[in-house]
Image (tube, rainbow, N blue to C red; front, side):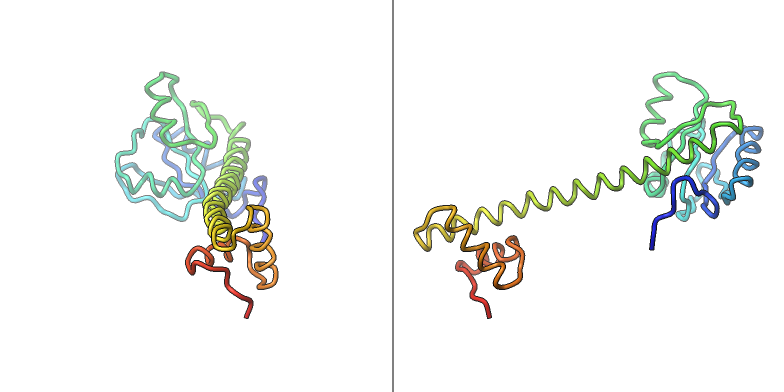
Length: 194
């Protein structure tokens, strides 16, 4: 199943927490044009976890309930800025917004803010996956090193020969070097193909 494009917004759901009715009506009207369903939310109330994006007015900050932060952490957040004071910006930054809009709102800029938010969210997700893979590889390097050292000591061979032995055994057994290394460290010897 392919991911929806950041430019295609029809059928998406937006959690909207806007204090000023004029700004809220502009957002609703623009969302209707773009085919986005609006999920209204009042701070203090429960947050619908099915939102694809959240527009949060800076006047509702700080969010005090940890459950609200958890739900908002699952989707990109667009912050609506009314003032640019350092204290207000600090509260906004706690939301880790993917984009922002400046109040009073106009219909121009809402689409761009949405696209930027979805695209930033997608890129951040990809980067987190890459970091997780690299961290896993780093952890597995320790296992490979331990296995190489164990083979070096048990077979009285140099490091390149020990690694070559592990690599050859892994290929013969159709396992990754990391999997075979974990077996070597667990068993204390190089398992035979079987």
